Length: 351
Image 1 (cartoon, rainbow, N blue to C red):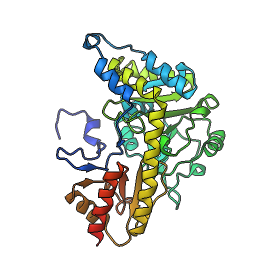
Image 2 (image 1 turned 135 degrees about the vertical axis):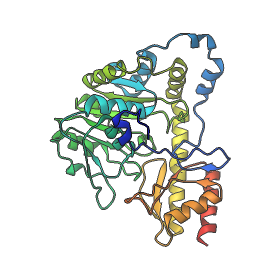
Image 3 (image 1 turned 180 degrees about the vertical axis):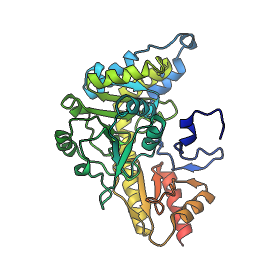
Image 4 (image 1 turned 60 degrees about the vertical axis):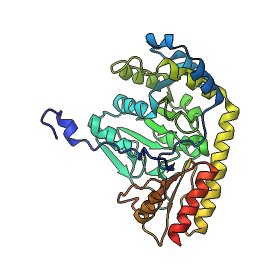
């Protein structure tokens, strides 16, 4: 603690990301894509002129926004971009949820949401998940300062289909509903098409997962022109040049290679389902997943014990050690070879 900190800094409990080890291990703890980005991204990096770096990038990121608008079949005025979806989410919290009424979110969801609330002094309430670990859409009271949840949800993996979100939005029209689609490409159904119908719907996405660009930091939001203008006002009061020109060019190249995108996501989905079956054979209870990770627990073994045993064998998974998730491990999907090593390590621990 420092006497020089602002009062709000004393009260913050920062988000804790997954471990980024220096030694060589199998990383199944931060939901990174196990496959490289599209070949066109490499071409951009190789051919990029360093002379461009002396110039500021386009403050409107027009080229990247146009590419996203074309891909998602929306107007470019409906698209906002930032340095990873975490930055986009932070700006959205500031733009829309600093209200007298509390923000509402699931009790188990992306753990950065409460951190933003602390930072911006946003009052918030949580609602428990259903017994089957689904986000209870019918439990959200529309008389609130906003609603946020991930769909598919993290770290549970379940996602609602578009028709369920459509029915939900029909009764919730007095506040902003932010739906975080970081994992939607691994089996979920995007609700971006609903943004033209519901002016209070904001959908965020990322290039970090299905586009394999976690190290580049690109995120976006799609919503009504009114909501995007609000985000732009926050951005331009904080950082007018968030997207550098190299990241923009690489992001566009990633969007243009649909074949590579489909190939990688299908490999992840196929491996996920094979590993689900392997875990169940080993006695694990595995949550249904529409993401690039699995949430699992073993009735006969403590999750902390399994986490430590895997770590000793050079394999990292995510152990949250919270009241609601203390007996679960979250396992990112790696390559087939990495996942075979993971299963072999588990077998040695369990037997």
